[in-house]
Amino acid sequence: MPADESSTTPNEGASIYLDSAASTPLRPEAYRAMLPFLQTEFANPSAHHSAGRRASEALEDARHRVARVFNAEPEEVVFTSGGTESINAAIKGVAFAQRDAGGGHHILTTAVEHHAVLHSARFLERFGFEVEELPVDEYGRVSPEEVAAAVRRDTALVSVGYANNEVGTVQPIAAIAAAVAARATALGKRIPFHTDAVQAASSHPLDVQALGVDLLSLSGHKFGGPKGTGLLYMRRGIPFLELLSGGGQERQRRSGTENVPGNVGLAVALELAQADREGFTVRTSTLRDRLLAAIVEACPEAIVNGHPTERLPQALHICFSGLEGEALVDELDRLGIAASAGAACTSATWEPSHVLLAMGVPLELAIGSLRMSLWSTTTAEQVDHVAQVLPGAVSRVREAALPAPR
Ligand SMILES: Cc1ncc(COP(=O)(O)O)c(C=O)c1O
Image (cartoon, rainbow, N blue to C red; front, side, top):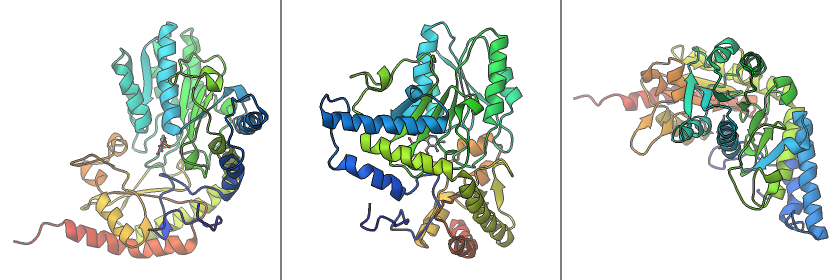
């Protein structure tokens, strides 16, 4: 943290930060709450002395705060090292336990999940599980009916993400979970339902009773908490085999000395994020729509991706023909603007996004994608500046991409 802790500029190299989907600045309140546990209150929360008890009390206080946000019991909250770990634990931990309990070996998910979900599920194929990735519509959505119809007697787990990290499309999670539960009941069984809510924490409710989910994953640094922290809500009674074995912390579900400062900061950030959901939504969607309108006016050929209304308020995803998204991101970076191409880079080639391809976006357009994600600190001046310089950046990158004249 810089000396000036009220600083909101997370990337010194870029003066305009439009990449909150990748990471967010630590909230000053979270930073302040963490400080004692980074300095004087460093004891191991499992230790049997008073310093250890103080650390343990802080940890349990953080757990209670998170549980209140989830409308759940504190015992149902597991602290992890991030979204990826929470998702791995939810998918692999539940799948193995379900199979052991005769709950089946079919994992049902969608084609637009984050790789933490898809790769966890595909990992399970090596152990005899069958993974089904449901197709999505042009906006990246699945319907409750489609998901329910794919549920089988041997389905061990259903995992559908709350909000997509590339295009921002929000799934009707409560309706999907209800449809899956009804179908499971009709089949005479109970099927755990997991949602990757990593991108939804700043704008959408996380009440697990209202959502009807059994497992929910979050990552601290996506809502103003510290990196290296995450949450897994796990409904009481859900079959689970722990991935990290050791000292039995987190009620035997996740061994390892707990990250007390991180979890304290995470709880504070989550409370703040959830308390400000409406304000965040209004502020970011107003600026996002202003930016979008200006871009569409200047570049009428730009294709906007994601659901027109059921979309994260901070998310803006656009495809431009005749260029590579990475080159555009580099050009914007040169202009002091941090954005993302939303495409994964492998060592030799640029791979187009699996999300865009699943939505039916043609390959040529999928390669030219730009993701801009706003944050609470984004200003009107910043989005106006981006709108002003982006068309020129697009033209320059396009020209550079043209084959040289012979
Ligand atoms: C939707 C979604 N799920 C999971 C993750 C993984 O979170 P982390 O990288 O913090 O472990 C991310 C991170 O980008 C995400 O956007």
